[in-house]
Length: 169
Image (cartoon, rainbow, N blue to C red):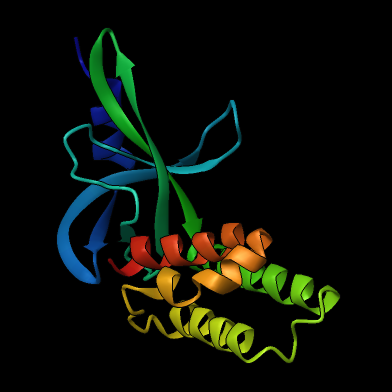
């Protein structure tokens, strides 16, 4: 039986460069679309493509897409395609900015604005998010007392760090 996805890939596919940990890994074909059930943006890749969560895929017009989730689709009990759900570069940055904003807003309501340790934490997170600066591996340990006192910031802080780790490795 003819694989319909492979036929569509040959006819409508676009070449994508795949970056992982800041380095070019390979080039593969994919089809940009959206999932009808969820209306989520996705790029469909062949089932043997070495796409991973945290990869950046770059299309010929230089638009970059951050792979945030994946699902292998089957047809007649065989892998058919990889649905790679993505964020645009702008959406990715906005997600990190929103996490930083959440921490800042909450800190104002708790009068942490003048706390030196808290300000250092915000500066560190902003540096990670905006410049892809390498964070020290002991960032959680460095700010553990602050996080213990203010457990609400653990979620947004974890989101920022995980997004950073996934985007640059």
